[in-house]
Length: 437
Image 1 (cartoon, rainbow, N blue to C red):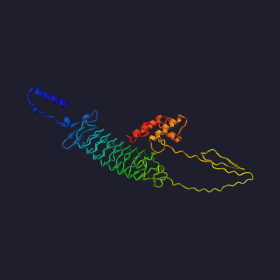
Image 2 (spheres, rainbow, N blue to C red):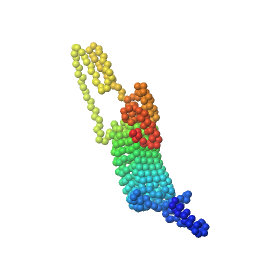
Image 3 (cartoon, rainbow, N blue to C red):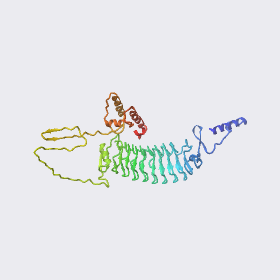
Image 4 (spheres, helix red, strand yellow):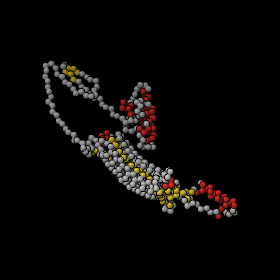
């Protein structure tokens, strides 16, 4: 705007002091400015260093080649290149990072070259770069932060270097053209939603360095056919391998792996799985498969486990005969109903029965159907109404699940938390009840 005002002032002075036609007045724009639509001036170069060191890193745009070049030393931030239609980015050696949302929604960008001096790609650096097809990540890279390549739907391949130690939440979420990925050996966890919605992903290699798989890590990977989870992985969070339509097998090598107790942790669609869970005998994988009716295939006895030994003991019953009485005693169990005693002559028999154990319910899943829905809220509200008349309709396990906030009482607050959860789930598939407490 200052340039426009300056030009207007020059024209006014020229017209007011010299009798020249306006068409005869020519004003040259600075070389660092190009004309774009609506007559707005757009800079073609500038600074983009981190705060306090802005001059250390500079950027320039070559309109002829459509290339944006970042040069200098140290950390960069985002620059004032919004509105420029560049197709490639070249970051020169000396720059140490790709800044926070630096190329957010640069929809014409197709390729990026990153030098060995860069060690991190920061939050949302290439978010919504829908035309980006390739990116070269150097061996110097140690971290790719959250949502770095979020919704880069044209990205077909990415090679993650061995130097990489962390991949942030949803880093490659929505990269629907990505077909395969190998996670480096230095990465210790696959975070929340890292490959969520990578619908073309057919294979993934998880190294022995990984110890946990986060919520929704591989959810909605519709082309993924099999996953092998190494014995280094000790926990698999909810919806980790959720809605993977083509999935036929999941191998879980740690016999004690903690698997989120939900049919949606591993499923093809709506909490159902037609494939096979593979794991060791008496493992958590076997228990998970059996609980939800999934097919289980045994890998045999876990390495280091001791084969069960069968011991056969033969006991010769001792018989005592007397002329006065015979007594028969039954084995006492830990749980009994009121005893019934039957006397016939001098013989006394005490039978005992066992009360069946009620199944447990996950927090907020009041009706125990494996999902948290409006039905659970309804059950809570009905029970609150029933309690006004001194009559609770819920079992002990249901009441425990209904006490969502854990305050020891059933109130409208518990129902409200469930309603908030259902609403939040529409926008964030990874939200949990605990997030709202």
